[in-house]
Length: 314
Image (cartoon, rainbow, N blue to C red; front, side, top):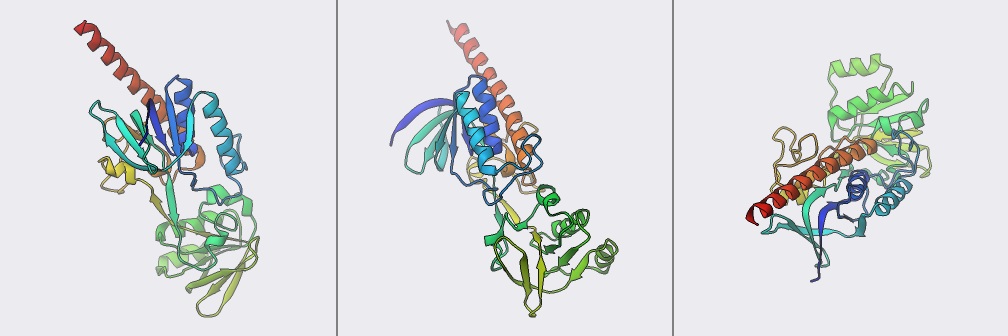
């Protein structure tokens, strides 16, 4: 096991939130190490949207530019997966990687994002991020005026909201119930809004991977769409935060943070999808920046307290 040098901050996750925080902290002359497992949530997407000045940018290009900016300011980025974290006697943290290496930090920012849990519909995962989407704000504009199928997913309310939102982009929107039992009121609402309701269970997606998508139902019917939306279950990768004892919000089950991303554990922050599953790229980047500013202030307070204690004992 190799003991590496101390860092002011270790950021776990180098997506939008982690890189944004790393840039701000490095520019503040903090010693910053970013550890990244290389599994960004939006990797399957061809483009990202809604980010002012970056609309339509390829996600991998966005991350590459962010890495260059953060490292140019002095941050270190290392491809690695964290195995565990332990509190040190001096109040800092030992961060152990899967290869046994240990990095030391005064404070932590966890920006490990989330994973989308998709229904086990054959043909869905191969089209995820290309022809099958989940966010109307991210991809609705790009499929405007096209035929759109909304497949009922694990999250009932979100599925219905998807259908309503997408109706603003196209007058050819269908809602495939796929196990969701609609109330009479919901049927009236969807019908009045011009959304076609197709009752039945989806058994398969097929067709060329660049479209259109043929949605097959278990009763033998098949409907073709130019774009498909479904609501996956977001699973925050918050195991490290929970292992540290960070408290969860009893209402949402998500790790609780304040406006700056500070958790209930002293010296631990979290930002991005790991604590805010609905955050878009621009939102996650902003959260990372806010956490970085708070962390820099926290480091300053610790430095002043240590300097004052040393002066009094001299």
